[in-house]
Length: 69
Image (tube, rainbow, N blue to C red; front, side, top):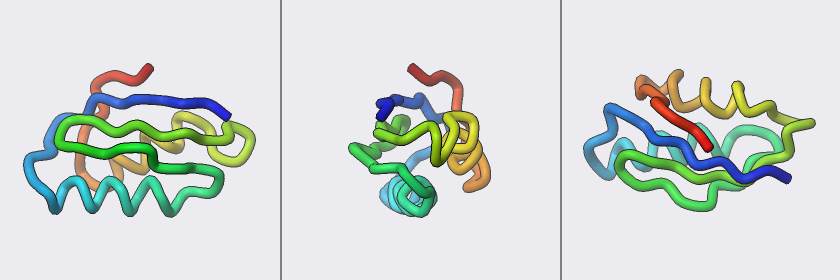
């Protein structure tokens, strides 16, 4: 399992937090640890869902991942 924290631009409210949480939680092998305005931390199985797919799930919701560690 891998833990990744993403910095996210474009989030400004509770709706944004819920949208990102839902998108990340729907991915196989991904556990959402924490989502708040401007960031998200997940633990995931890279064999089930690669890191790029995790980032893309956030971007598919209309936000921009500007950094991940």
